[in-house]
Image (cartoon, rainbow, N blue to C red; front, side, top):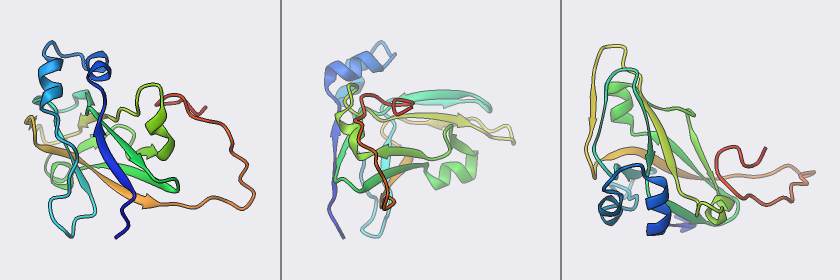
Length: 162
């Protein structure tokens, strides 16, 4: 296996800015960095920083408190944990989250957010407990075209590249 990345917490100041909860400082102290469950797991589980209940059709934005520094030529793709998708139709609103290697140096410290929806069509409410896995990230290597000419630098998150 290639070792190409390192998860870190964003700064306390960044998290307090991004987290709308009154107890954001306490939440920050409890943030767990993503981890694989087994040696054969491809995905790194991301853990809920605080508890959240979503009724069918409800959406929430979760500031994970996590950033990732990775080698150039790699991307982190984010997906709902398969069990939550299967049992509750938990969805990431952008279908698959894409974290580029240059996002780490963004003005928001590369803070990874997840916008999630309980898309249950069976009337199921989902309870996401603090510290429990809710999405997973998989690192993938990628290539570029022979005539690629991209030279600009990123300075933000969603929509920052045009």
